[in-house]
Image (cartoon, rainbow, N blue to C red; front, side, top):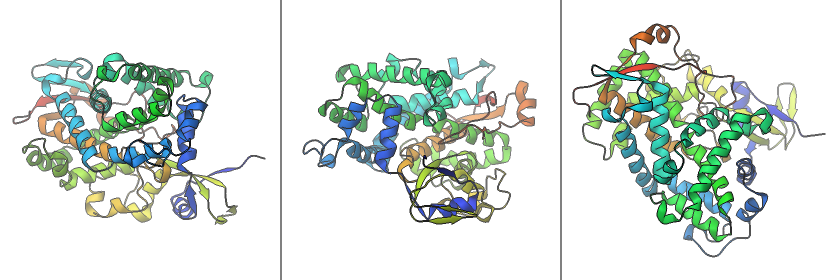
Length: 434
């Protein structure tokens, strides 16, 4: 008989069972994801070969799979390497949000000093292109100009990869994954001097993958997962954040009053000044509370009673952390509603063990620090540079039906809006906006 998987859903049960379980090991999770992205069994085996005694100092005596975990922390956790990467992303993000840059796919129309945009398209175009080019350099998108379109399809259907649906049940997802893989394989097949500008973690991981004998096929497949992690959540967070701001004129004015002085000092050090804008940050936390759906599979450490069921040691439990975010004993009042001042009124609420927007354990999102900076900066630049309103031709629909969250589709991160739900916005340059 196969092992049972228990799905725990109530906030109280999730909190209780979390204390008596341990996360799946790093090796279990990463091996599975590498294979899902198309890596060969031989390539995965080499990632776990005997410890090496050469290479980067941080990787000495570690197999590459474990050294790679260290490298991602060094790149994406606060420190000099994250600051270098962030400076690149911020410059690209700022340039993409200039008035003259909002053209083509970003703008539905432009007349009489007004540009009409799809909020979702704007968030996707700006965030995905900025992060991808900052991490891999400009050459990847030059080689594969349709890569981000393929990624959007993949990201929307990615739950089918997690659930291991075969191609005949997930044709669009598998086609998009193959397009991403082909783009990365073409990229890594080029000589390095023809694809300059990649960030530190890409360079060092490629160097060490080649040192252990991996070819472009496996290198491309192994970079599929970080490509997904880097891009998978920020654009949806920005969509929800801006939707709430535009839907509440008073909230928009309050956030603008905080960020205008911060931005007036320039881009250098902006991320630190934005962290000192309490309402800007409080809305960010409330968006995370309402719209993230992280989960983890954990192992029961000791026999645990859960109602009428006893979970034996070793049993696997699926914990959807989203349930914790609607625990009335922690986030009251009106936990089902978006309340912009919830985290402003309780300043320590974001430190609650019931607030887990980025998961935990093995699957704790490595890109969370970048995503936070991206969202705060995107929102700040938008409200500083533009007067924003729902486009009149679409105002009846938008006011009657705020974009609805798709809570039925399985997700490992930020929940998208229902298909077809969007906000069409009019932008006008503000006096003093760049």
